Image (cartoon, rainbow, N blue to C red):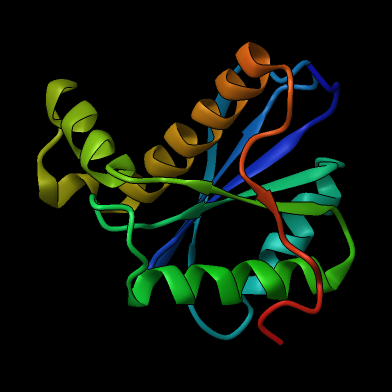
Length: 153
């Protein structure tokens, strides 16, 4: 397991969930929800810099069949924008059902859909990042695919 803090990102059309790992790559925890639009990349860059993350894990939304969707292209373009900053390496990891899992976890904890809106994206980012950490620990290799800064620009 590579040491160092990682940031998990769940890219949505309206909101972006952000999570982080501990320095040992054992546990993912929520950080914040960033509104999608002007300043979103700058805010994520600020978080990455503040916590000295060496890697950004961006969820790649695929259809259940594994095919790409419009959201897939959006996440790839967003990841390329993050990679272009040069602050940390960026990796795309399969995130199928992460938001569904996040909604289920919040329901089980007694939260309603209405009072979960502000945190569901963070929980989805935690699920994406935790999955990536667990994969790396068990497979002994980094998860997903590296995003080159020039991709999608």
